[in-house]
Length: 343
Ligand SMILES: [Mn+2]
Image: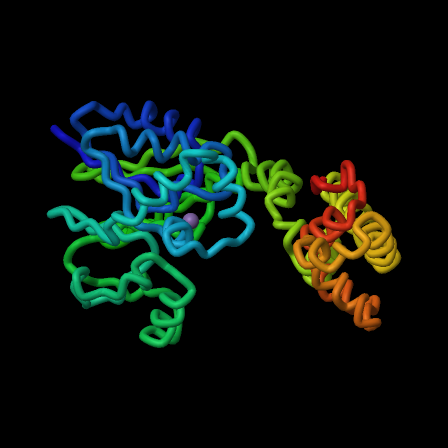
């Protein structure tokens, strides 16, 4: 008998996925279905995605986490996932774009998050099915009190994930199967086999999100565009991040603040640098000065100086970020050394 194994939110828990497939003794001609949320929070999202993409007879539904990647809505867990995927990220997101929002089998329906009871799957709002923030609001408007699945009385049972229901699946025989048992948070990974309606479950090895969230703090901070960020934005980004103290991240932020401070300290010195450059060019080129100044990378500042109107503010407006300051400093012959590269 060919079975269909419907697996709850995997969230990058690849080792647990393999253990669950073994526990359920999945055969090569069985169909394996993910309710969605293959990625984010767990340690091996790329391995999970690659496994589903490579396996014949696999179906993956669009979870709200896949949808965040597809729509480039980036919170911390998506930033971590992007780093975990490395050069495979764009290809994985292109694949996610084509994921279906539901699966309808003779024995069961499968959605990621929710549905409005009594409405055919094809007529459901995709945001409700995937469990986006907008979808939650639509669902709340339709069902102001309690859970959608408490009201579910359609003739075909429904399996879903999205909300961690505890260490054990949420089951109402013949009606609802809530399969998200929090694998990425150190709970369990759970699957339902149909048509036999047998449940399988394996324990998570650890609280993966706690571990990954910690391990990726500095790598994610390194992806920030510190060099081209305006100074105010840079100060704000560091201050916001410091609201959540963590030794390694704080040490990295100290290095960024020191680097930024050293570059900002160059700015007042750039006015005398323009004056010195002007004097050097005049001494060297004499009557040819005007042509040389007109062709010089620091031309606008040399012209301001020639008109007697060079102020610190003229320099400051050209030094709105680390990269802009370093570029101007280079034009004025300032040796910036190691400051050229952010921490
Ligand atoms: Mn989830």
